[in-house]
Length: 270
Image 1: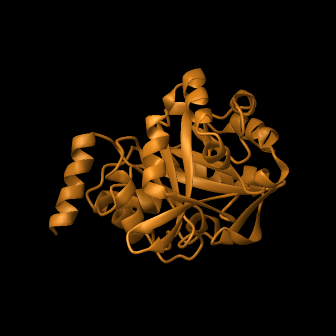
Image 2: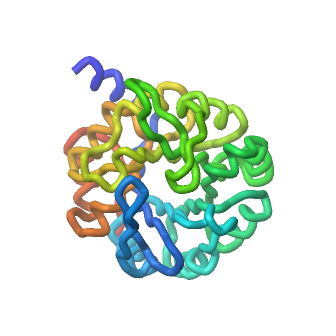
Image 3: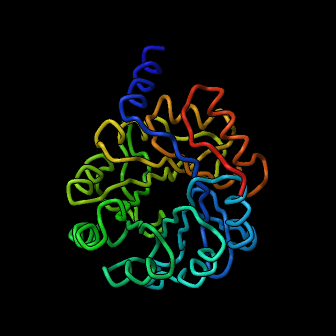
């Protein structure tokens, strides 16, 4: 109870409303879903699902090009351009963004923020370059984390395929110091498992930095939302599997959050 009270105090002190974010992982023209970022299964049309989540009341959308690192560039410009015609909430786009020019292209297509993982670890200065060009709020540090020991996680790249040897908490602290204004934190161990978020991982990161942290990977039940917010200190929660397979809608999550005493944004029918 003391831990829950402490994190509720943190939420109040930050004076923020928790964001409900729909995450869409993309391969080619398809929305896909995997387990541990592997075994990708085609779900359907990215535009149809994105529009559904927007109409349900998602506060934001995250698009991740899952194979961009293999091909050296992001392929989502057309998908984002199509989405921007009908969807009017912030969109974050990641995968294969290796330069300021890459970021410029995807922002011109309609994205509001870019998420960078592999290229940031290879060239940390890219974080600063993007932040200086577009603002810290636009530069999202994407982190794929895998537990390697009790209380320790290693950062991975290339959609969870490559080890880096970098400690996640230390890397996040460095990334924020270089200009990242937000962190997208994905647990490889929990992603697609429906076993709940790695709350200890989220708590370790939120305790280390003052920028917003988006928890991603593992939401299987409505209760998992409150758990990662109250006990992990997450500023936002990214959901995929639970939405794609229609085990819940955004409105269910919003109501569950309110029932748990968590402040979320009001939803006006769109």
